[in-house]
Structure formats: structure tokens, C-alpha cells
Image 1 (spheres, rainbow, N blue to C red):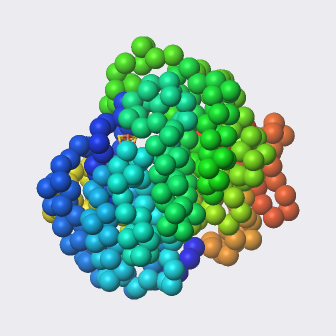
Image 2 (tube, protein in one colour):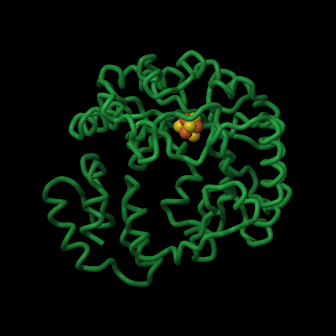
Length: 366
Ligand code: SF4
């Protein structure tokens, strides 16, 4: 647990709604973007008075932050920098989609401190992008990456999706090769989940989703192939070149504090968890929903085990002043024997096949 803090800012707008998406996002227009940024500016000031901690990561996510344009993004970063105490050269990330990212003045944002960009590629295969309802193509992602690199920002992450209807290993390889050829530093690779209230859920019979075994195969293939290409896995769904892990996202798994600003954004501050509802009006009125005490032993175990490095016994003892329970380790033995977990003298962690069933193992262990 660190004595610095991260800031997450949610931009709830997208050009169109993807059929699988359960994030809080909607279509908007220029005046709605500007009005929303005004609310954000007000709330950034409010939250800056609630902590004395130094900010070392800022993450502007969504939604699609790039739809609100350079000027709005510039003003948000500037406001964070003016209000909070910032560490020199903090990690500042913006999520970008290729269709609106191409219009962003990255040079101007770099001047404000932007040094990391995460792009929603999802797939480099035309048919898969169509099936995902995405309005970009691989070429536009390539152009956006080049545009960003021209400004000198080389900490670029691409998102990939696993378990897309009809997805084959060959196509997944094509998508990974596409990322590798662009020489990005980070790749997130999420397994598609069919969430209720999405178009995919309503029409799930119309799509040929890979079954659980095929999706597991795609995941294991991605882990192996990415590692071969120099991207080490550091979390269930995250891979990077050395020293290019997302510092902001590591905060969530290391139980460090963060303040989430925006509808549907979650926070962990002074040992408490709370969030804003999925509603701009409620955010404007600053209706904060308590989500209980955070930082418990159970939470720590669960979050650390999302990391490839796993749960470090010494660190656990430093944080909680006691050893990890014998009961936990005894129960974990059966998963170690069956190859889902591994244990050394210092730590316990999931193997790649263990990550695939980590939720059910954790509910048995904790
Ligand atoms: S662009 Fe991203 S946030 Fe927006 S609807 Fe699609 S998946 Fe959801």
C-alpha cells in the first residue's frame, strides 16, 4: 500500500454503443460534452480538498474520452494539475478510440503532461470488428498509433478481445502480430463476457460464441504467444514490455488509494470504498454511495492473486501484522497439486490455467 494516490476520471460518451458493452456510456453532442466537463472541473476541485496525498497516476477512461476533443481533455488535465499535489512526471493516461483519436492534438496534450495512451483495438480482423459492432478498422488504429508516436509518446497500450464469435487462433495470432508490429509497450487482452442488459445478451442465439473450452484455449494461446513476443503477463488480462506495466491499474490490485470522478466511478479513500451511480445528474449532485470498508485481508488476497507475482507472504505480514492463515495454505494445496497454483518459499500465485478459474478457486479459498 503506497502513500501516493491515483485519480480516475470517467468520460461517459461514445460515438455509438457497442453491442457487448456494459460500461456507463452514451451518445452525446458538443454541448453535452462541454456541460459535462464543467461538472467534472467542479468535482475535481471538490475531491482535491479531500486528500493531502501526492498524485502519481491520472487515468482518463470511459466511454471514449477522445470524443470530447482536445480542448476538453486539456482542461481536465490542467485542472487536476492545478488542484492536486502531483508527483514529478506522474503517469497520465487517456483512453482513445481510433475514429475520434485521429482528430486529437496529442502534441498539445503531451504539453499538458499526457504520457500514456490506451487504444481500443479489440481485433485487427475486419470480420471480428464488424461482429463487435466497432466502427474502426485496423488501418485507423495504425494511423492513430503513428500520430501519437510522432509526438514522442511511446507508452502506448492496445486492447484486444478474446472469445469473439467465430474467433480462431489464426485470427488471434493476426491481431497479436498487428500489435507487435506496431511496437506498442502494453497489451490488455480481455475475455468477452456477455453481460445482461447488452445487445449481445438479448441476441445471444444469433451469434456463434466460442464455448468455454475454446475460449480457454484462446486465452492460453494468447498468454504463450505474447510472452514469446516479449510481452510478460503481469495480471490476468495485462501484458507489457519490461517497466511498461500500467502504474494506475496496479493501484487497484495493490490496494493503493484512488479517487474515481464521474458517474459509475469507484473510489478507495481512507479505508473506505464508495462510488457514484450510473447517472450524470446524480454525479452532478454529488450523491456518493458508500460501499463499505476496503482493504480487508480477503480483499488483499483476492486482488494480489490477480497479479502474476501473486501473494507475497512477507508483504502480507507487513500489511496485516500476522502470517497468512494456515487454513488458506492447506486449502490451496489441492490447487497446487492440480497445477492451478504454484507456491515458492516467498509467495503463492495462479498459473495461466489457474487464472481461467481463479474466481471459483478464490471463493473456495477465502
Ligand atoms: S467504445 Fe468502448 S465504452 Fe464505448 S460503447 Fe464501445 S466498448 Fe463501450
